[in-house]
Length: 420
Image 1 (cartoon, rainbow, N blue to C red):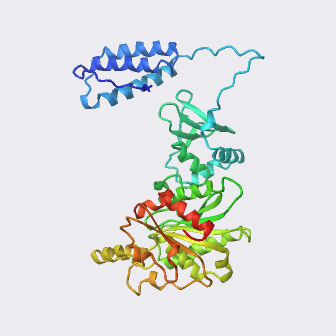
Image 2: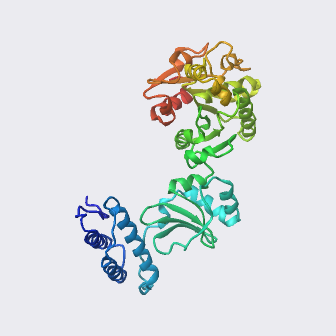
Image 3: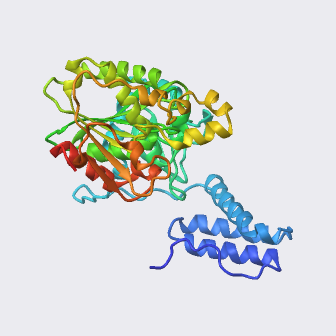
């Protein structure tokens, strides 16, 4: 299938002017389906005049400079010259159907955008989130941008060339930018990226409603050491697609000891538990340290709270500690002071991870190991009293488990049957 935008071709670089002119001709030839003939003629005259000026361009940067210059000229041409007159309106009896421009955007994200824009809360919402944005005036995007959604003067626009998106207010100020998926997650209140998630304070749930009926229950997810909730967002989306309400818990892993993390999670869990109907099944899906935090919380739960939990699936939990904290703290003792959590995961018998009390009521637990786990050894994942059919192994390494389809299928099987 031929490329539509094959702009850079193998041309001699000894003559920058000749190269620039040939490049611009190729640009116009490939872009003729995207701009009108009027604008094309204006751009050609501008480029011909530019090419008469012998500007020295470094050979290693010719392609980049020429592309940026041509793009700038094309944009200036659209602004400097009037656009062609609009076509006459179609007759009343003629019906023309075209696909909606916003068809690429998730309906739930568009609905959230429209609700906040209509309520006047969108600006405050974006200001409280880490959007990587500085509120900046724009020209409104009349040339290279198309509207994906619009409400009360607010617009979500997508660039026609690079496909990046942005959110503009009624005065054309930009309040957020990024990929379409980034803005969708941002509007839904979920962590849009790993980097922005690290800047969040944490200690909260990100919610992913069930996408199909009948609803199978609620899945609570906890990420592992060194990560944030974005690391488990893939699992949360899979759970939502399978019919579960997913609650993805976020916490800064290095900030506190496991006892403090467990208590904070328990407080957040109890707040959510009040809104879950009594007969609805509750499942847990954890990765690495997340399983330890759940065990700490279980030890502080009442018997009635433990009985609400149908089962727990732990992916590579260091239930007996891990050799990595032993090695790191021995090599650099200051690491144990900087990371309170890391020191709690030592393999010593007096380590906090080996002193976690049993829950007030029995809870069914399944454990998934990674076949190439270099962080937590197989024997370090085991818990006393768990039979062999409650263990399984999937391909991959320790950090690949939150991304593994095999791990999610195994977890869902355990949710439904109580065994792998």
